[in-house]
Amino acid sequence: MMWLKHTGVVPAVLPIQRQFGPYVPVSVTIGYSAYDPPLYWRLDDPKFNLVEIGIDRRGGHFVSLTVVFCKETSQTLSRAENAPAGGDADGLPVFSLEPWAAAFDPERDVYDTRAEFYDVPGRCRIEKDADAVRVVLSSDAIQHRVITHGELVSEFNSSGELCAISLLKLSPQEKKMLEESLMGAGAH
Picture 1: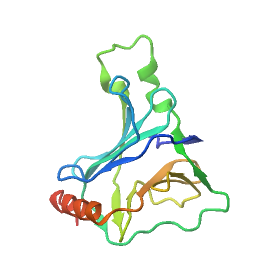
Picture 2 (picture 1 turned 135 degrees about the vertical axis):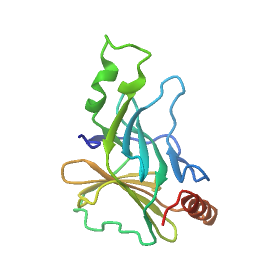
Picture 3 (picture 1 turned 90 degrees about the horizontal axis):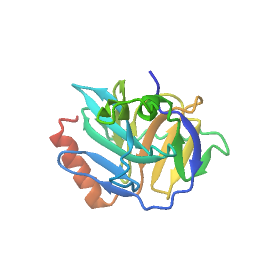
Picture 4 (picture 1 turned 60 degrees about the vertical axis):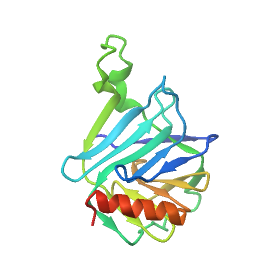
């Protein structure tokens, strides 16, 4: 099983688009072309949650986060404040494309889209507070963060694996939409 492995940072030039809705509790996108769809890393527990993270197929940088379903939420954000000095970087995280090696195989059937997804079994949880939401993929200690436009924070463990993504500066309307969506998804 391979978690998303951080390999670097690139400047973030596009604005962050975020949505909270009745069927998808959290959706974040940092532009990509419909002609060049992202590769997807998915954390999947069919009865509990589905989280999709889109990765640019050319360079490996983050392009999207979608929480399709999550049963576990908490009212308290457990943001780790113990990242080492110099542990933060500005921009977009870049991830290893190794899990999608089959997607780049010149012999693969172009109609076989299975190579564009990398599914990892596991559970996530959503934490929220007054003006932020955090999607926690792993409870490992945070050693490094990548901050995008001061709104999106990607957190990594000592091995460079993605552990959590936070959305900061939620408006009152966004927070209300998130809460309604989570109630509709059966979260408690």
